[in-house]
Image (cartoon, rainbow, N blue to C red; front, side, top):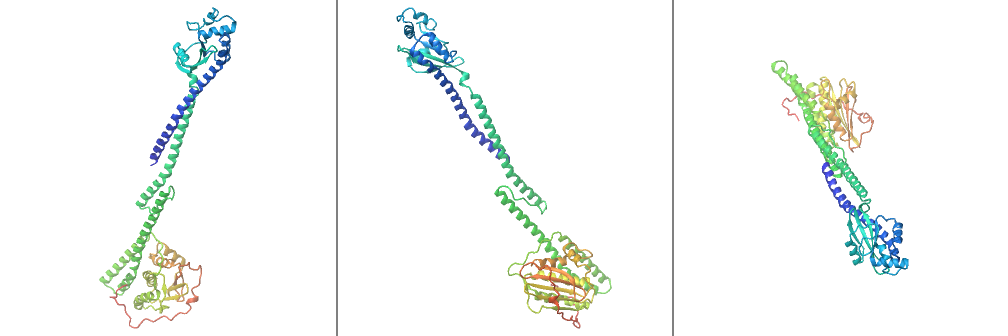
Length: 498
């Protein structure tokens, strides 16, 4: 495209320069020719008054010399006019022998007087006398102007003015050189401007091509600067938007795989607990080994899928769920495991509907992640509780336990944002955090009244950012007594997992 623009500009500018320079050069040549012959006419006109008065040779020579062109001017006086002039100048009768010497210096056999060097032929001079008007004729080295002048006797004299070729072409070559230089400058300038315009158009297109290649090679951070002509700017905006969508889709796919894998931790926890109760024996040992291997594979899938962590989109208008219903459902599932391990548990605040702008599956996954951590990282018999508090602008979900607690809550939250260590994937807290932040809320870890860890989930109802610091103890003062396990409660081994 760049060279195409340069070629087009070169062709157009060259045609314009030729269209204007050639006629202008011809006009300049004609003007120089007209100027040279105009000067010759003025010189001839300077001699005409003297010829109308006298034809005396000496007087005419002085007049020709005073005109400054005696080397290029000649005066041709017919024989009759020469005799008349001698009579006027000396008083001798017309036609006397005194007129003969006066005509002896001429080139005509009939006694005519010629002053100066004759360059035109006798035929051209005679033709001008007969026509009675000026004429030009070509001679060696240039041209001559033949100007007829009427004498007092009625005869016609001819003034010949020589115009050399150098006078006709004076200044023409210089003018043509200036025109050629101006034309070349115009062509070079137009080519330079076209090249810059071509670069301005080609570079954004090249960046767009490079960005497409990088995105195709898997470099998801490839973006194109929005610059250049309007069409290329729109193309760059569309490309960047497409790249963002591709990154978001891939990140959502990875996150979905991570979420699904993490949800497998819940049935894996049940399998691990059931396998632990099988007792000794080859079959039991094989079952426990298989469960551990399956758990390791799920952890590997979670870590691999968490390479990219997109922000979870907030629920749209009309979306959401009843938090109380989800809490009751998930506690109904985990209560069976709690009774089997002798854990005390309780639920508070889930007796009336509480609408939140979070998808049902997201809230269920968050509760399963936190409750699974309780079962995984606390000893059997450790009590736990789930409290649901409904406020005017936010809903708080508290998951607490009576375990040993978390020595460094900040490190635990940091692990939730990155890769887990010490046998933890770190995805559980990450799922909870993303769910809360999608509504403008947050997640905090502290100490519970049970003596262990308390995870507070702040779910904003109006989509605004959660307060920088707000105590959650004031609204959670009332605690119900921990339930005792139901008598005779056992785990239903064939229970279907949600």
